[in-house]
Amino acid sequence: MNVVELEVVTEEPSQQSAEEPPHCTKAPRTSRRALLWADVPDAQWNDWRWQLSHRLNSLEELSQIINLTPEEVEGCRSHHFRVDITPYFASLIDPDDPNCPIRRQVIPTSKELIAFDGMFADSLNEDAHSPVPGLVHRYPDRVLMLVTTQCASYCRYCTRSRLVGDASAQFSRHDYDRQIDYIARTPQIRDVLLSGGDPLTLPPRVLEDILRRLRAIEHVEIIRIGSRVPVFMPQRITPELVDILRQFHPLWMNLHFNHAKELTPEVAEAVARLADAGIPLGAQTVLLAGVNDSVDVMKELMHKLVRNRVRPYYLYQCDLVEGAGHFRTTVSKGIEIIEGLRGHTSGYAIPTFVVDAPGGGGKIPVMPQYLISQAPGKVVLRNFEGFITTYNEPNDYTGHTVARPEHPVPNYEAGEEGIYGLLSGAAQHVKPEGFDGMHRRNTIQAAPHGKVTWEPAPLPITPSNGHNGYHKN
Ligand SMILES: *Cc1c(COP(=O)(O)O)cnc(C)c1O
Image 1 (cartoon, rainbow, N blue to C red):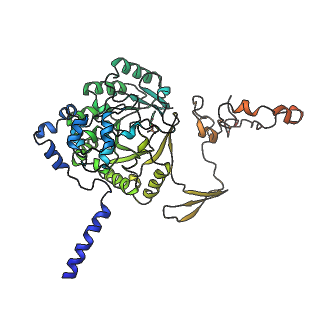
Image 2: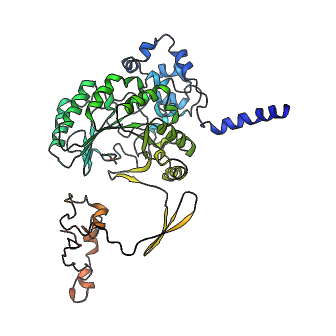
Image 3: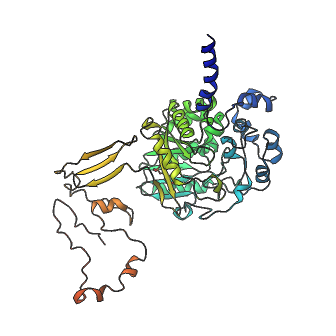
C-alpha cells in the first residue's frame, strides 16, 4: 500500500507540469473578477456596454490590478498606439507574471518604441491598394472593407495601428457609400471581407445597413467579418446581434485567437451562438514571441478551437509594423510549428502559415518541404515521420484544360495571371521592372548578323492548345 501511495505522490506533480502551458499556469480568473470588481453586479459585468465604458487605459487603473514591470510602467506613460482593455479581458491577466500571454498582448511596454530594420507604418502597403478610402482591393476577386477604426481592446502588435484606435478618424456614411459603390460597379468582386478596426463594435443598425447593401449586390457571393470582439468582449455576442448577422448568409466569420487561455467558458458560449446561427467560423492567429511561439502552446490552442467548432485558417508571421518588433519571431519558428502539427494532429487543427508580404505582395504560404525530389514520371515525397516514398506519375496524362479551346485563359488584369499564367501558357516569363533595358544592352552586337535569337518561336495555334504559348502583348 505504501509503495502505491508513494508512486502516486511522486508521479502527480510531474504529469501536471508536462501538460500545463508554460505561462500563466495559475488561472485565478473567477477570483480576480470577484476580487477586483466585487461591487459590479453580474447584470452589469455581462453587459457589453458596461464593458466598453469601463475599459482600462491609464497607468493608475492598470497598476491597481497588475504588478507592472518598469518597462510596462514606461509603456503606459508613453505609447504610440492607443491602450484600452475591457475589464473582462483584463480579469484574465496574471497580475504577477510579466510573461502572461494575455498580458503581453494588451499591456504596452517601452519595447514598442524601439525601431527595427524593415519597420513600416503600413507594412502591407494597403493604402496604395485602396481605390477609395478604407477599401483595399489587392486580390482579383475579393476586397477588404475597413468599416471602423475602433476595437473592443487594442492588440499591441496591431497591423493597422496607423489608423486603428483613432477616435477622431472614423469612417463616415459617405465613406461607406463610396466603398459600396466601388464594389457594386466592380463585378469581379465576389467576396467582401469586413474588417477595421472591429466591425462588431459598430452600432448594430450601421452594421446591418452595410450588410444589407452588400447583400443587394448580385455579384457579391460571400461576406466575411473579421472580429476579435468574441475574445475581448464575449458579452457582445447577444442573441439579438446574432439574429441580425444570420439574415445575411452566406456570411462567414474569422475570429482572432492567439492563446488557449482566451477560450474561456464565456467565449465558448459566444462562439457556440455564432456557430449555431450557421456562421462558418475560422480563426486567425498571429505568431507572437513569448505568447504562442511553441508547438505545445499552438497545438493546445488549435485543439481548443476545433473543439469549439472554429476552424484554424491562417497563422500569420508578425508584420513589420511599428511597435511590434519585440513580438517578432523568425519565419523558421512558424515552419517548425507547422512541422509539429501536420500529421501529428487532425488536419482541421492546422492553419496555413503565411507571411503577409511587406510592401503589399499579399499573403504568401510557407511550409516545410514535403516534396524531396522529382524526375520524369516520379516524385519523391516525405511524410511527417520522415518516411520517404515515391509516387509514380502517369506517363499518358493530358488533362482536360488544353482540350477546351472555347475556354481560353481568363481575361485577367495585367499581371494578375501570375505564375498560373506561366503554367497555362498565357505568359512566357515574369520579369522584374527594368529587366528589359538592363539585358538589351548588347543583344544586336552579340547575335550573329544582328538577328535576335533568344525569343522562342511562336507555336502554331491549334484547336488543342487554343493559344500560341506566347504572351499576348
Ligand atoms: C487577407 C486579405 C484578403 C483575403 O484573403 P484570403 O486569402 O481570401 O482570406 C483580401 N484582401 C486583403 C487586402 C487581405 O489582406
